[in-house]
Amino acid sequence: MTDPNLIAFLDRLADSAGKAIMPHFRALDSIENKAATGFDPVTVGDRAAEQALRALINEHYPEHGIMGEEFGNERLDAENVWVLDPIDGTRAFISGLPVWGTLIGLTTGGTPSLGMMAQPFTGERFAGDGTRSWYRGPEGERTLRTRPCGGLPDAVLFTTTPALFKGADREAYDRVESQVRLVRYGCDCYAYCMVAAGFVDAVIEVGLHPYDIVALIPVIEGAGGRVTSWDGGSAAAGGRVVASGDPRLHDQILEMLNRAG
Image (tube, helix red, strand yellow):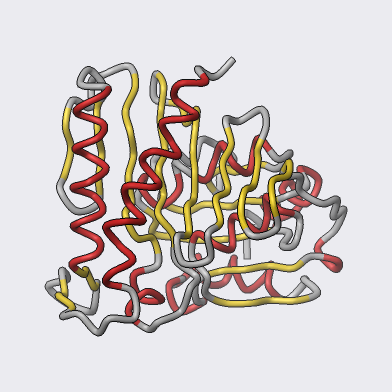
């Protein structure tokens, strides 16, 4: 059973991050580009939120490790490691769109064990510990459950953009997309939370970092879904990831992605 103190601490972390971020949302702050080529934006809000998260963790759990997008790693050899993305969906954030969130994950012995996506603008939080998941927001509080979807022709699929898939990965993704009922692009972490909430059936991504997915794995799995790499292994390291609400659909997607030709 998950330590209730850690669950309560998730909310303290989310409160702290939200307080640091919200003065910068729709505020037209300056934006930096972290990429040597292309565009990988970072804002004052990203950095302020991660600093706030790290300060709380180091104050209350100094023996825990931290992996963060903006300020690197601390004590990764610890049994418990917090995996942080202060603003997942920075492109949406700088565009004024509320489909971003703060991802706060915890791994225990290398396995994702607790996670939350907090969206301070909408006041929503999606959290889970791998065995159960819960929502709190304007709709009140409720248990999260994925919905049944036995086949691709009935599925709603999300991805950030097909432009991220290259070569054989693009061909594999296109095989899946061509079979589903509805495809939508964008939404970053919010799309995964809609899988856990039973509104979306699957998300397929490539090029993820651990801080993009670790927090979301316990949320989706606790709601009854599956999250794996394209080869069916652990998704905790990021890379090529599939998240599905129905395990039957998940198996079909994996088969389609790995079909030769």
